[in-house]
Length: 326
Image (cartoon, rainbow, N blue to C red; front, top):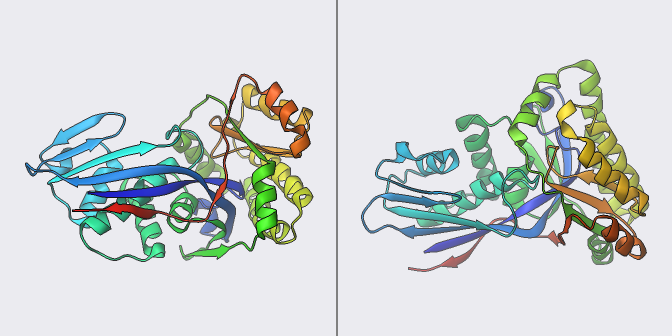
């Protein structure tokens, strides 16, 4: 039996510039961190030679081509696993449509487990790129590359997406004191709304070549570099300004990124004393994140009484094997 643990991610600024429609012409950049909420994948040899996959539903098939779950089907094909295996998954928080990169955490975690199962080595960069290939090429998901790299590498990173399809991963130097400040200043609320990131990102891909949208995305990519400097300078004030600017810019990309409910939540948080806020992920649902001084947390939580508060902390590790046994 093999069990992997793969973190979800929380992006601060630059999301959307990791889509090839943008970075094929100029570099994109995202500043993100993995968080202490995880996807767990368990592999076990199946006695009868068939394939069993358990997630929100359970599949039992004898032929790999009959697996409905596209990420599982393509991952097994990539590793040459044709049968005799059971795959189960669990997550700490809702893992669909919540803006935390859950699909990529699933893919990276599954690939980590399968490589161990097949006794094969793979570098962290190759693991991330294989996950990108499966999701974007094989499964035709209109998504970017930030989630796979965040899940594989872990930590607080500046991710740069280059026109030649390479990705630069630069760990952000964050003092222990400022890391604590970031953790204590972050409030995250589950909106209760889920959405398809694919639909929103597909629309964003369509408009990315438009001159006015490209200018917006270019500025968002620069914000990622500025956010890195803000962290290294221990400036929560700078980060708050950049976060608000990023959210304002992102809302102009397509109509589906925000809605009246999301706007009400954001305005309520800012009105109660938050420095800044943004919706995590592609938009339209999932988790709303605020940066706020600790002395305003009670007031913010009170105005968000209909929403569930979920505590996130920065996680420094990427996908890893937490159990390996015969």
